Structure formats: structure tokens, C-alpha cells
Figure 1: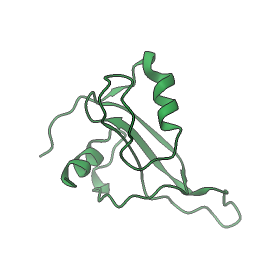
Figure 2 (figure 1 turned 135 degrees about the vertical axis):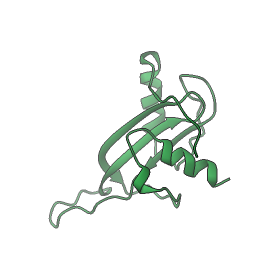
Figure 3 (figure 1 turned 45 degrees about the vertical axis):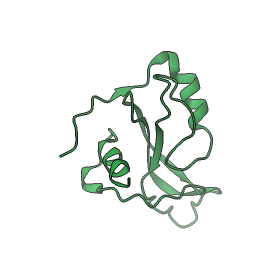
Figure 4 (figure 1 turned 90 degrees about the horizontal axis):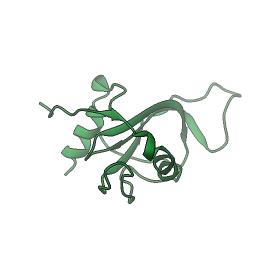
Length: 114
């Protein structure tokens, strides 16, 4: 059973820095401090993309999917649906049946990886 986390939207005062940090390509663990709580516990994860329809491909993109951005310390997060960039690679095993807009299932997988 995973712990109860109280996820919340990114605080307005931190939006600009949050978006600057996540604008850069990275793996699941980002090296930056969270602009909300200053912890070094920022993460991002893209769901496996659904391929583009033939003839509708986009350069630099793998397909359509979801993206989660979150801080494991203060539980600030964002979730988007959109295109998955071609630089994204991650072998994290996430239980897709538990995915919601909140990153609980992904955070659980991060904690299990050790």
C-alpha cells in the first residue's frame, strides 16, 4: 500500500522557474532544486507514446502520450497530454492500471527502483 500523498498544483510564485527547469531534456530525475520547496527531488515521466497516424508524423517526436512533472518532497505536480519527445528514454516499470493525473503510481515505481 502506498503512502497517502497530498498532491497539489505548483505554487504560482514558482511557475516560471518550474517551467524553465522542465523545458530542458532530461531523464526521470532532474538535477535541479524544486522552486517550491528547494529539495533536490524533481522528476518527470512520459507514458509510452501512441504512434502518429501515417503521414502525420512530427520531427523530434515519438507519438502522443502523457507527461508528469513532480517533486517527491513537497508533492507539487503537473500532468499534460501531448507529444512525447524523441530524446525520452526510461525503463521505469509503472503499473499503468493505476495511472491518474496525480503521479502516485509513478512515484511508487520510483521508490521501488531503489
